[in-house]
Length: 84
Image (cartoon, rainbow, N blue to C red; front, side, top):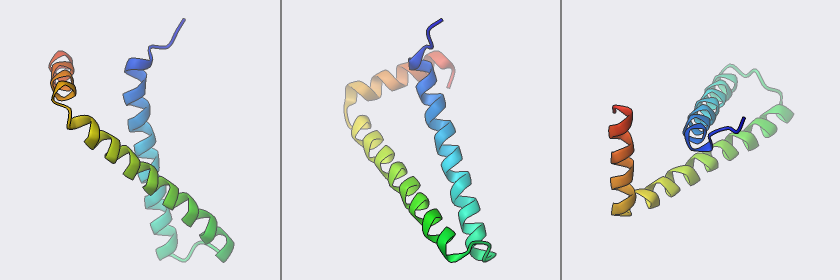
């Protein structure tokens, strides 16, 4: 059975975004509570910067995608079909 990548991709993107936000929340909580030793702070900071950079790239690509009127109409049509 082949996975339908058209419907799996938005779900995976939302799941990764939620995971990234959860990581950033735990990272900030750990910094505030001083739960990390110096080596862990460096590792978690690198991961946090990576998550933030991935989110920035995602938003930049979404903004470029939405500037095309044809793509915007297609997205509106898809949302109408799904009931949004």
